[in-house]
Image (cartoon, rainbow, N blue to C red; front, top):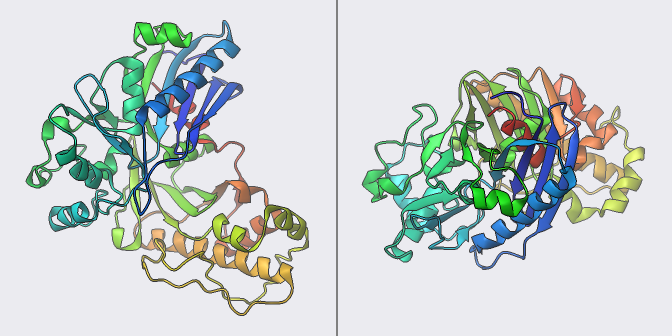
Length: 424
């Protein structure tokens, strides 16, 4: 299709929905957000009523349509949290709650998967979408016809077409992105193959708005709905970096690294995975270190006050591994990996700088590991998240990584998903 005048990206998370309308020039033309109630469950159980997602999405789209007025919207796409899954009937009506990305109850099911799935599969672990499917299967009744991710279900509500997913969301359901097909070991788990979605590439048009939905939202029925992606991939797309060797570091609650590569890398023993976008791959991993551990020791006001006093050209020599609790995913995959935050200097500036140096060392080691496993070492690193604006930290990181480190202009997932919609 021709380049759209305005596209809408919808980011569905666990705490709320955010939607952004973006012009072909990249300018944000309208935006809206709506919160979700707190997820239900405890002791590893985290779930939401999918209708909560839909009400928030419809509210956001409706407000954006009103703000845009006569500006033509030609496409939209949805991203969701990776691994969030529900089962529905043939018409998309939920037969189960949505089990969220961090729901860990499917421990027994994860053991069944581990017995048959190759080690490189994204379906391993109690939080995987496949483990959730196996957990829900005997509890969902006999009306089930579709296993859908969060983004899949919202796209189905928009189009009235069910049973379609994208290659990024489908990774944790067991989809093989290299073969571009469901693997032959899945039926051995008793998974009803008919429940599995048809998988398409992110950015591919999957339908148009259903007429009644378009009328209710205030958009034309000609708007195309484009296959979306996961929230983390959408955040990378938002930055606009796309060349082989371009890397994106997210300095949010946790530290996430991704680098564009020509070939995939799957090394679950190191917490390394790859998402496919066309004929290129985003190779990366995520550490448990990051902003969350900083906030265990500093509030935001103190961080803002101490940051100008940091001395990036005078390392502290503190050898910290900042973690809020034992356990690490990447570049070390060890559930018992201990935090290391001693000795503790009396000077709060030195303590903060030591923690930032520790997170920087994890980032450096992460990119070195990805390169050892076959991904390119970054030629530049673009940074997203709250920590991206910390100039002394940027200078520390640039020295440690040995490549230019830049702050991204955009990194919100909804913005990246709007850019993805423009590819349809």
